[in-house]
Length: 628
Picture 1 (spheres, rainbow, N blue to C red):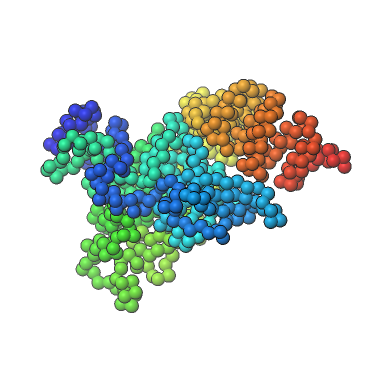
Picture 2: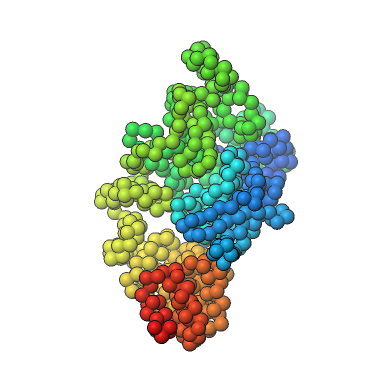
């Protein structure tokens, strides 16, 4: 048996493949047979794959996936930045101008007063994310962390604008930290720092072969040993999606081509899914459910839309790769290739469209049955409708009128109650704070006992008393975020000692989380444990030195313990990063009050009143110093 020969060879290379467990279905059994699902399998990178598969690698590099992510350079960028390409955020009163300095892409953030620049900050872009066929967005690496920059080039319209989620007064400037979930769809497999949710140890440069085929080390070693399947049977050292059942083929694609609320199973990470596995064993993908229409039309909902097509529901094994060759760019694929897939089923049917329109469309099936439409989640972008159907020439997939009635799991028809509750709570937080999602979570919680989920629910409304009522000693083994929520409740109700205990647990589980460290340092300061406060705050600063709460907490700490020079250093760094941070200005006022520098204190009081004219304490102190 071919599998037995493979196992024996691999055993000789110190890879343990002892026996294949009994499985409940043929589909699961096949998944278990793939040797590169084992923990010993490692990712080798696209250059190693190219040693044997140069023809496929060469064309793959030109696909949207192959162009998904790379270091920022003129070659990678699809943008054509000119002097007039300037963004203005009227809510925050910031201007943004991207420009090239040699091969370095830079972004200048600035503010004007009467035509003069009164504030300026320049960042160098580290990575460009997106193929450039639709968009280029931009990332900045800060030590082990990566943040998103507040500008995107929309290639289809040749337009500069803010990224999704940054407009309408929501500009997070340079503080939106990219996590593993985001990176894992737009890139090859990253490596995270141990016990960290968003600190990166290794960042590759683009989606590669192993995102669809799984880690390649076992396959490479097998082939290097001179072994090749000779009887046409499946090579279980690597996953070839065409050998998978249609369900597992779809899972490979909808791992990324299904934008929704991804809810991880307990103990799983976004790096755990490998092609050939059951996706819902790692995470489930939830989308809003609407009464009376097809729901939202988003940029990356190809899989969900496709699976609602009659071509899929009534077809026989019809999947994404029936039309798409992942090794060849869609732009380089002749329309006749797509039309042939249609004609494989519809060759005996007569097209009922008028000859005028057929001639206009050159008998191209896709143009009529998968029309392009704008999307609801990303501006200035249009993509093909993947719900294959009959549409008129005025069709638009976008529907802004309907209200959601709930959520549904795309890749699991029977999600657990716990998973549904988590889906509703996180969808409310991350995507859309509509009351319906919290109401649904509450309904499910009424008949399901889960202290951690009750804590999550109470945290969203800052009902600290209710949250604390669910705290028990058994929760000391809870995840980092649950511990943080409990700490926030105790801190907000004045119990700083308990807050410190729970924050210590949160840091233990996510030791580089600069937010947790900063909060812990603040609580230690309140408890007058200044040495411990300094230690954790400096650790937070070392990890990410542009987190304003950490800079503020250091400034406040050093003011209290008399290290005024250090206090000034960190507070001035904070105000340089965010000139509108009221907490920073309050701390500067305090610093100069403690050091009896009334001229500086008055200067910062005036600054504070410009930001917040109704600040009563600042009004009183400014009046006192002015002698009015």
